[in-house]
Length: 499
Length: 117
Image (cartoon, rainbow over all chains, first blue to last red; front, top):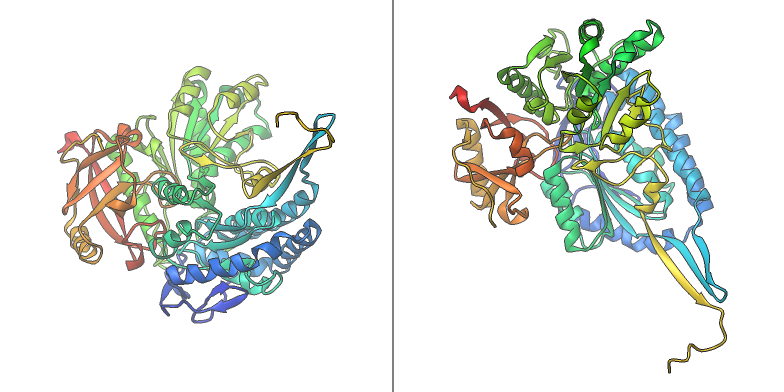
């Protein structure tokens, strides 16, 4: 079954103080679909004045919103989940149009995961408790969770509605007001989200402001009227975000990507059963979402003794990936999200070739001569090389996996950890000892064992090393959006005796 | 600031330089490139006001292009030290705080190993 592009209005506005609001400068940018290069709609090219309006609206309502009961906030989060559920298909088609990812992913992963995320934080906020500790017979220490106030959030373009949900749901559950800036490549579903939820929340609790990083992102991150900034993206902007936060002494969370190893030990090939098939899928997951995932398993480490057999099967599996219209239910890999990503990926494939990497399959742009001719498509690509190469060290953020071999466990760990990043990793083995000791020795925040690319709420997600800090998709994230108020009470009627 | 300086590791295409000079007219001459890592718009150079980003001996200078100094973190440089970089420009809608983003263009890099000239 194939879906078709939705119809759009000519232009859309920011969502500030519960109203759709034109940008102060009256400037808009044009948004195009990476599927076929077609025009989608115009979105506000906001500037500091628009951010000011949003931060002001949020500050006006933060005290009242912060005092709402968790029962009330939980019910609202569940309503958001219901609204997304009722409109799942519309969100999915729009996400495919804006980002280029295949419809089977948006229908089965992006939107359902987003929905579950709202339900997770709706429930976990009601289970959260402060603490009461009797320090001695007359002294009680109470810890009460309080919201931070107003939170700024800057989200990426690879999972637009899901990343919005990862950021918004815990912040709102904890009782904060939010000013959120979607990525300029993918403004569509954030706007649809604002349209669908309308005035479900009090005005000013959720504000969505579109625009470019230097013009709208920076004024938001550096605004003295916010109490925290959360960011997902790359390291230079991550550093800038941290600098701005330092000026206002604000807390931050940043998730800055990785260069994740996916390690296959020799025992995986010993069974000749369904698990071998699962391993092939696990290795081919580098193509999921066109490789535009912070935890893309972009370094494939295979034990020498099984390399030939393994890679032969995997090349077959990779060549079987169906590439075509993202609106077609059979399509497994769609378009890269923008032209600059497309050019960057092709440039990295060239870098790999010049470094001496061998192209095992793919290695080129994928050209279509039908309605997809102006989209940004790249063949799923396997490059063989070594871990010193730049293609093994820098995230290409495309459907490109770099494969190398290792002799033993020690060498596998050495290669896995020789990276600036530490976000995700995969370990595949039938050896129960390896299944525990290897993940413990990998310096990364999420290690998948005998699986990959699962992102359930209730399992914390975040980085080591230059991949950033903070743990999303888990109740731990509430702590990143909360203050701890300590009330220290004495029940002793007698003075200390100092004065 | 006491950062390592290596020279002549970076050049720029004519198209990219022409565009860079327009940005210098708009934003002033005190700009730098900083190579970003990580996901999304990473693995690409960011054009920033020099006063915008804190640089120290963790950053390595790779030389000048079009009058603009090019830096990257020394940890990244470890993997780049045998590489010559050419900055190019492409149409595109990147995110990040790089100054060319609002113009609808994005700086990207091509590279070659130093021993292939």
